[in-house]
Length: 324
Length: 305
View 1: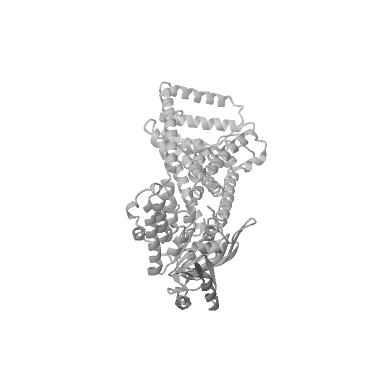
View 2: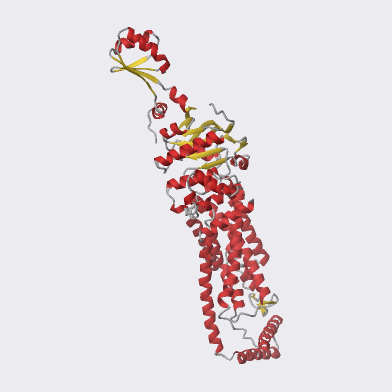
C-alpha cells in the first residue's frame, strides 16, 4: 500500500513538469559542453601530438636520471611517465577529449552546483505546493498517517535525484558520443593527486580504469545528492510558498560557496553542509577548503545534515495544524 | 428521529484556542447514520475550524472526536477511513484530469478503480472526467470534490458549504443526492452552510453556531415548530384579546391582528368562542417562522453571512 503513495507522488511530480524542466536544462548544458569539446578536438587534429608526447617523456626521464629528487617527486614522475607511455603505446592522445571523459568530468563539474540546484527545483515545492494549492486538506484526510505521506515524498525525491544523476551521465554520453571518440572506458585514470603546503603528494594516487573511477565518483555524488534532497524536503515543509523554499536553497548553496572561498580561516565553516558537498572533487584530489576534512569527515557531515533536516521535517509535518 | 441509526460521529467539548483567541468554544454534537446534519452559522463563526478538527487537520486544544468508534487523534487511519470530506474549497490537483484526481485518492484508500465510474456518475461528471481540473468551473470542482469524498463508500460524509458555486438546478441535484445517500445508504451527512433556506431544505437536524459556540441544536422541524404561532385577523382586537386572556392564551396584538403562541389544533375552540361573542374573524392562519428569523432571535439580531 505504501507503494501506492509513492506512485501518487511520482505522478504529481511528472505532471507538474518539474522533471521535464530538469531534463531540458541538462540537455542544453551538455549540448554546449559537447560542442566546445568538439572544437577542441578539431584543433588537436592539426598538432603532432606524438612528437609532443615523446618530448615530454624524454624531459621527465632526463630529470630523473640527473637525480637529486625527493622520493615523492620521483614517484610522481615515474607515474606520469608510465601514464604517458601507456597512451603512446596505444596511439592515443591523452589530451584528446572523449565521450567517456566528458561523462567522468560531469560528476565533478555538475556535482557541486548544477545538480544540487536541479534537485532543489525538483524538491523544494514537493510539500509547499500542496500547501499553496490547498490540496493538502485532501491529501492529509484520506486515512493515511502524515509520516507515511512525507516518507512517500522523500522516497520520490530520492528516486528523482538518482534519476537526474543517471540521466546526466546518459545525456552527457549521448550528446558527446556522435562527435567525440566514443570508446576508452578502460583507459587508465589517475586520481588523488594532492597538494600539501610544500610538496606535490602522490602517495594517495590511484590508477583505475576510467569506468571504475567514474563509478566511484558517481557513487559519491549520488550520496551527496540524497543529502541535498533531504534538505530540500525540509525547506519545502518549512516554507508555505515554493518560491521561498527554492530561493532559500539557492541562497544557501551559493552563499555557502562564497563563505568557504572568502574566509577559509573561519574553521567552523567546515561544518557547513556546503563545505562537504563536492565529495567527487575531494575524491579526485582537490583540497577541501578547511583543514581536517577527510573523506570520512565529509561523508559523516553530509549524513548528519541530512538526518537533522529529516528530523525537523518530520517533527513539523506530522504535528502542525493545517489552516487554509 | 425515525431513522435513528447508530451514532457515527461524536464531538465532545471541542475547543480551539489560538494565541488568546478562542475560535471554537466547547462544541459538542453527535451525528447519527441516516441523517443529514446541518452546521449553520455566518462566515467566521468557526464552522471550518470545527471541520478541520473533525478530520484531523487541526489538533483540538481540548475535547475529543470519535468517528465510527475510533478516536481521531489516537486511531487516525481507522477513524478517517470512515470519512469522506471537503474542507473549505474543493481544491483538487488542477494540473491533472478529474479521472487522475479520483485515481490518486482511490489509490490512497486502496479502492478499486471501478469506484471512479460509480462516484462520477453519482455527481453527473462522467462526461468531463478526462479534462484537466484547471478548466473546470467552481460548480464542477464542487461535484468532483463530492465524488472524491464518496470514494470508498464512507459512513460519514463531511461537506463544507457544498452549495458554493452551484447554480439553483445544481443545488437541488446535490441536495437530492445527499438526502438519498442518507436515506438509502444510511450515511451520516454533515453539511456546513451559511444559507438558512438550504439547511432548512436539506437537513434533518441542525446546530446553530455563532462566535465559536453552539447556540442551539435540534431537529429542523422541532426548531421550527417551537416557533409556530397562530395569527388571527379580527374586527375587534380588544375584545378578542380579552377573550383569549380569559381562556389562558397569551397573545400580542398588532393593528387588527392577534398573534398567539399556539399551534393550529388549539385554534377551532378559540374561533368558535370569538364567533359566539360576535367578534368577526376575517382569517386565521398558522405562521411558520423561517430559520432566518430563528437565527436572528438566537444571535440577538445579528445578521447572517
